[in-house]
Image 1 (cartoon, rainbow, N blue to C red):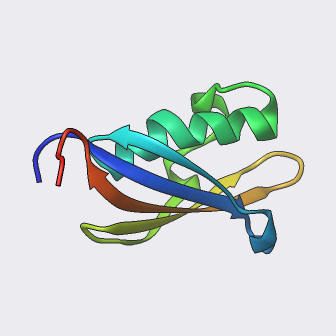
Image 2 (image 1 turned 45 degrees about the horizontal axis):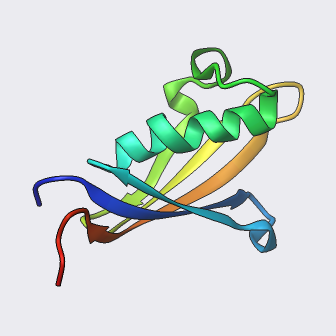
Length: 99
């Protein structure tokens, strides 16, 4: 698949699926969605800033499953109290393709 894709992203704190939030993101792949859009936003919610290099290490981001259509990640912000989010992504379309 070439080009940019439209992703539906849902995230919630681990153990609190009723607090699910969602957004749409246009990006090339799951890694771009996660590191460029979602983690900055979550970091700001947890720490009040979007300095990922301070708040997150690569070991704190775990890919649970991934294929061409869906991906799921577990993200843990470590501080005095660990905050863990579950992030689900799904490709819902390709940008610029009309059917």
